[in-house]
Length: 411
Image (cartoon, rainbow, N blue to C red):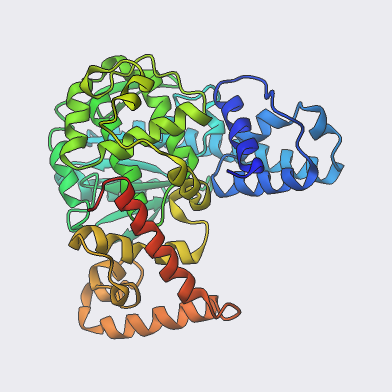
């Protein structure tokens, strides 16, 4: 691992543990790189909290320090606004007796020492099918803009930037790669719990279901463009906060059935190596209580070097580069067909894949060739100064398929 990446992880670890960074001095060029990395992974406030009091940071150019501080405070303030507005709307939906659960977002932020440092681009709720249309009536009545996203929808508040994503299931029912994951969540309303957030009782998934959802959600993004280091932090913070409520034998059994246990164990390896994870509440497979004992058993493949490299490169949900985003069709196809990935599908996706972006396909699927042409021209325009972009996408796609094989997700 590059030295600067390790410095970034050490700063993040200090922030997550609410401790002082005790690593070596970081030079100006590396600080600029770390700032950019913190933007990609949506952890600017966390990194700023760890670095601002350091002597080496105080020696830097005033303009850079002011920019870093301004961005961190701007993001924190906007998060406070979004959180406040969401809690208002949450109470409104409850008053209207809408049956829904909140997951991710505000629930995860509540686990952090400084909740508003952990940003959420949106808030997610899952609604009973019979209340789906009522949510639209209530939220648009509160001044939010309705955004149709196909299987799910979203509501945007222009005053605060809050976006609420609303769905009837945790994963797309139509997806061959992960639609079946919903089978483990068919009783989420019956098993739901409440968590206090700023004095408001928020209904959410049970701890058992929420933890396994985190693994599934990270896996979903790993199958497409990838996911960022903040998603790893959410995973281990959830264990630290609620591990005592987890039926670990069931947890590992559910993951093993889907070949996700190796992936989860390597997330833990990263958390222990780089982020200061306290795993005292974990019971590992085969009733191991120490991670080192599990590794020595030789029953599981634990080597997170390739995974942490992919995570650092990916950013939040694999959005660091367009090339990475375009690998999604190759990796999804490799999982769905258990093959090496189909290059044709990467260039000419299905209606289901494109109907969210090209909404006319929802009513007129016969226009799929038109959407293909639009997509190709759009891609060429974005990459007009990079003739090797297609090759880069294909090579990256093959590398990411190799990762899926390394972590036993496909054979």
